[in-house]
Length: 368
Ligand SMILES: Cc1ncc(C[n+]2csc(CCOP(=O)(O)OP(=O)(O)O)c2C)c(N)n1
Ligand SMILES: [Mg+2]
Image 1 (cartoon, rainbow, N blue to C red):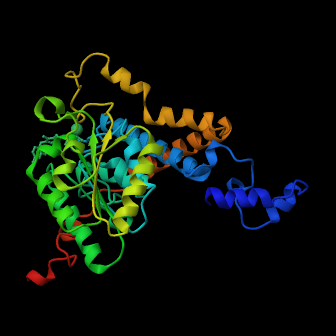
Image 2 (spheres, rainbow, N blue to C red):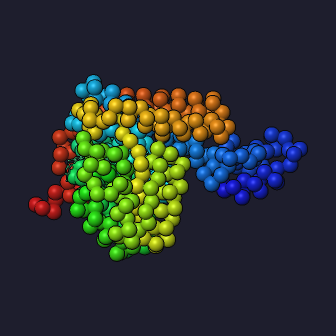
Image 3 (tube, rainbow, N blue to C red):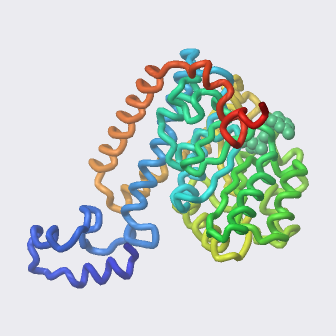
């Protein structure tokens, strides 16, 4: 419900109406009840803010759990956490339509979850279990859930940008107004495929939104030491006729607004966007990395702007009751615990799955 409709509803609600009359009014939920307008009733609104808070927590707690499982030697292979970067995944996902597409990198747990892939499916995949989103055959770096629009996590830096163009081109050709969101790191902007994909998308006016998550490092190298411009993505946008857009990637509301505007433009046939979201990863590049190369105090500065902390503080300052936020926190923790147990209880994939999902037709029949 938008601000104008809310206002109308508030005005229509008589000062004498009893709470019972109000609830019988129509199918409004508790969150939709007329109430005095406040700053929380802006373009984002209360309902979406609570969804955002819940999603941010889901991403944070599931990834923390993934780390615990790693320490217990239950996760096979390596993993790349995006603790600290959750507002990018949450802000973009909440701006998407169900049938939109997401492409991401090996740092893709949050993006896959944010599109609605179940926690047990993600944790199970990391542990190589049959309940995993690809039946435990892909692992952390290859999370994919096509039914949720999560079109894959790619470990070759830059490789997925042209693939995302393909998905956007397909939507354009079919005339569905689906939008593709393609996430990548700052280091990716020095790879040829980045420039090829940007040029291609701009020339064809593809409905694709490129999102550079600038976490200041590519592996162990500060991006500023190997890049000719200060903002590795935004400062190159002009080369492809695109606007220079930088957003605070730790502020989920700011991300959501920027994402929504870019999606609306792309859906309306106005072509691609390139957005640089400034953020920071709290942990090392991968599990094995203690991140000793970072200057002392840098992490502490960024922790002050932890996306979940600042979002919670904003909700409190907007008047959301502490008890409601606490209930969401407890519920999310319970769901992560349940998902962990479900994933642990799931068996490894049976050998019969080894030849499944290798080819577009789902099998090997056509080759024989
Ligand atoms: C083509 C290619 N070159 C090198 C690597 C090794 N590598 C893996 S991650 C990474 C750093 C990428 O940094 P960035 O794009 O900033 O993403 P972030 O890890 O910070 O999310 C590199 C160089 C690779 N996977 N693919
Ligand atoms: Mg990076």
